[in-house]
Image (cartoon, rainbow, N blue to C red; front, side, top):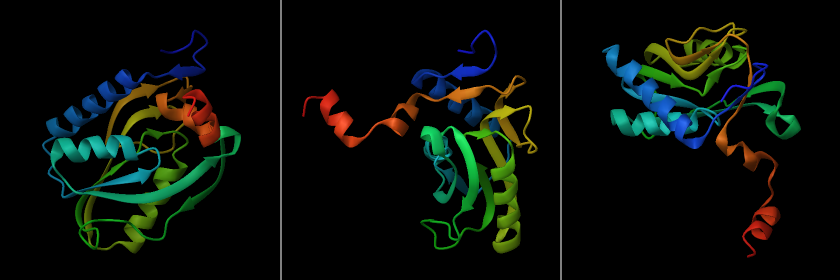
Length: 174
């Protein structure tokens, strides 16, 4: 649900899964055949996992991090993992790069540059996200929602960003 001022988008678990399914349909309808899904951790892990199951493709993971301060609300220095975790030894062929959103575009642009420079066995690379903000300098190949007001997206699992294990045990009286 988008707030009246357009500055916040609140997403339920059901809506998150519906949007991920719509992303799968867009990819399927493009008739593009790919070999591997590469998700960017952490935001791309949930949609990457679902897409991996739907398309029955191996899931590779590349860890990135830039939103650490303020319970994940403040963008800082971008860190990109040097290595990709994949069940097939080395990532190669046609790769679908998955993240949750194209926000500023910084992460996706940097990751694609790194992949093209350091992973020559990748023969084709396409990208898929749930949301694309208008301020993004990156345009994904597949996207479900375009956000012209650039709202802060409140994803349903973000409550865990500011919850400790002690708080969780207190919640459940364990």
